[in-house]
Length: 161
Image (cartoon, rainbow, N blue to C red):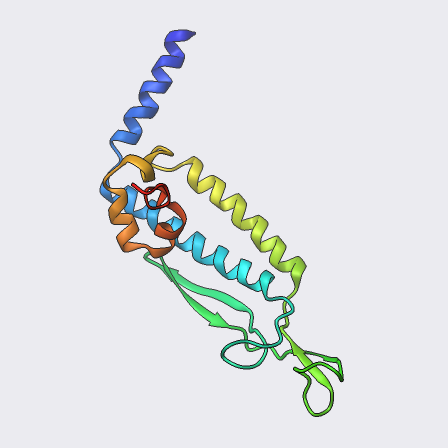
């Protein structure tokens, strides 16, 4: 039994050591897409009640579309706002209505749960070990090429290395 466990450990380590540059790049692409989607979902949840933005007007829901080669297009929802009568609000229009983003919290939470499930699967079957982003020099290429991977996995930067 011990020999069998040792064999699995050695095979697992060998698999990680022999990951091709293409496999590593695909893994980084997948992570970059996932983190772009997570950022959009989290932004939507955080701005559920935002009636005033720097750009002007209410927050518009972020939607991720057309992902390829590790990058996605971000679109702003064209859905009309939800109008609520709040006469004394500084954001009220002349009729006393305030425009709120058309964001369904339950849908966003569902999307976040789906994201977590996909993320777990991608990481579980990763071509590299968990320590890849901390120790491997090839991680620098991921960080340079994929900004969302850099933001979420550049542990060296966080640790001051």
